[in-house]
Image (cartoon, rainbow, N blue to C red):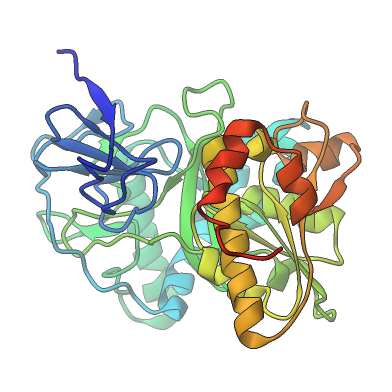
Length: 375
């Protein structure tokens, strides 16, 4: 069956966020693709968009197989405290370390070498449901052995309760490939959520990330779109003068290693976590290092302009004046991590200079976000 897609418009805005641009839907409006929101999404797209099904029984996932008996739940559990989530995720990574995936740490290129420098910080996420079930059993046994109690998994994104009452992890289906578990750290160094991505770069998921989530499962919930703080792990207590934001936790780890004088954070997409970024960089210099297409992709340019506008408004409200700089590099390298690894020169632009370097379409995309703002 051929499913048609169309962009949202003023006459037919997005059914999720209510906006007339960016998002799209199927012609029959049974599936909505929201570029702004992932809250309560049935799943995320490979680009981090929230995908919402009007019929919750149509469970479609990035999987080889899935159980048709899995029931969908429209009400998610309240998210557990950050301390409890950290405790569960830390044990998960401890019992399923990335070193179990020999291929993922044996090469010196891409995600398997340059980006993952401290393999003990990341986990290996089994591709089959039965392996993940055994992993949950191992977590329970470890907690019982150490603390004498059975841990609670309710409200920990990624965990849910099966029809037999037993806790499960990561859906009742098999993925095509083994996955890497990437923790997102809060300002105190605690694990608040995790993303997953395929180990093999040749996979159809290459370069793509999904949140570890249990939305639509009993006792499950989603993580939202938290901001990753690499700083608490790599900054080592130095006086913070500059906050640098880039895309994703892996890029943030690489940037922190190359630029240790910055406090580095990573968001899950160019349009996410803007308020958290501005709050983290309050009364500090802010450097923005989104991918190189921020000069040519109108969607990325619009999101970057939105972040700048929020920062400028806060500066005026709180009466402080610390610069915002856009970091660019040779366009042959997609991300700042690739540029740093290759030894490319970074260029630091003022917002005005960045605007002048945009393509006409990108500049037009920023006008609405920056309307009425003096740079």
